[in-house]
Image (cartoon, rainbow, N blue to C red; front, side):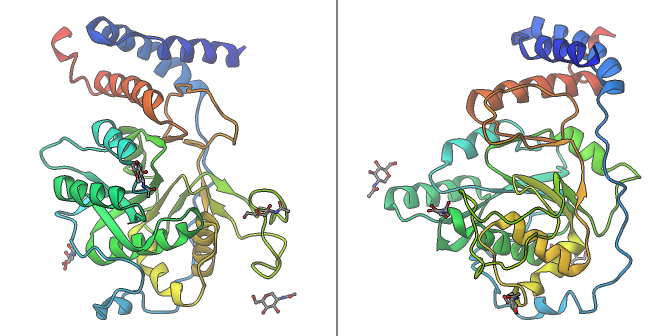
Length: 335
Ligand SMILES: *[C@@H]1O[C@H](CO)[C@@H](O)[C@H](O)[C@H]1NC(C)=O
Ligand SMILES: *[C@@H]1O[C@H](CO)[C@@H](O)[C@H](O)[C@H]1NC(C)=O
Ligand SMILES: *[C@@H]1O[C@H](CO)[C@@H](O)[C@H](O)[C@H]1NC(C)=O
Ligand SMILES: *[C@@H]1O[C@H](CO)[C@@H](O)[C@H](O)[C@H]1NC(C)=O
């Protein structure tokens, strides 16, 4: 019964038209949704127990050498300290996705921004794309670039250069590493991260995969030469996960010890495991399975995978109306 009711509210919310009337309707619907669904849908997270062991190496020492350790080219710094740094993996050709992210959830319009989105980009083999990217970087200045050719199986290089850039050139409390086909519910994510119960150190949070088996056939098959155990260490799905600054800083020196693995999320899991940091699960990281086609609105998600184009616009619109209602901005004059 609860399930059906929840479905109804969700359907209703996702079908509301835009405009002023839409805003008020959403506001009212939100009351129902938050009061009702808020009690129905709680995303339980595994008890976040910080690891007791301190790393046995000096995590900062690698920064003394100005030489980059990874394929990182960019040397610009973050323009300020951010509470949340969002790094989005994106291929050179995906300029449309990047622009849509900038126009929807990717920009903090506050006078003193709490968070900032950057895009992680490798080199384009196509000269046209390469020229586009140079122009884009001039216009927005939000690209972090790597010196290797973009390739699906080289995502670990992107993670490595991203971690190096973040810990060398930025100050922040939390980093969200995301893909360019997701919706981030930034207001709610920040709200969650600012909660007293959210650890400020040693955090590795996302949709946790517990001791997953190693595939020996299918798209994700791996040979015994590549990996000869039956299971991987726990990891968080790569579409979107959160880490604290201390974890990222201490992972960088491990790049010399653990060689890059073809699947980037598995690689991050191996690195975190080597550091003694546990992958903590939270169901607000909504990562649907392979053949997921719907574009369902789900209240209280932290992020949602497989949201691009019209789907992203729709979901962002709904979340934004809810936020404006909850924070009483747009509707202030009505009360
Ligand atoms: C490069 O990309 C452009 C635009 O997407 C395309 O029209 C062109 O055919 C591509 N060139 C090559 C050599 O693939
Ligand atoms: C980060 O903050 C520390 C201490 O406030 C400062 O020394 C350092 O220069 C900052 N780094 C960047 C890249 O802003
Ligand atoms: C293993 O994966 C590769 C691609 O990485 C694919 O070409 C090959 O067909 C797969 N093998 C099996 C047995 O599924
Ligand atoms: C597994 O691979 C590692 C190196 O990658 C090697 O040291 C170890 O002996 C291998 N184990 C088995 C059972 O083959």
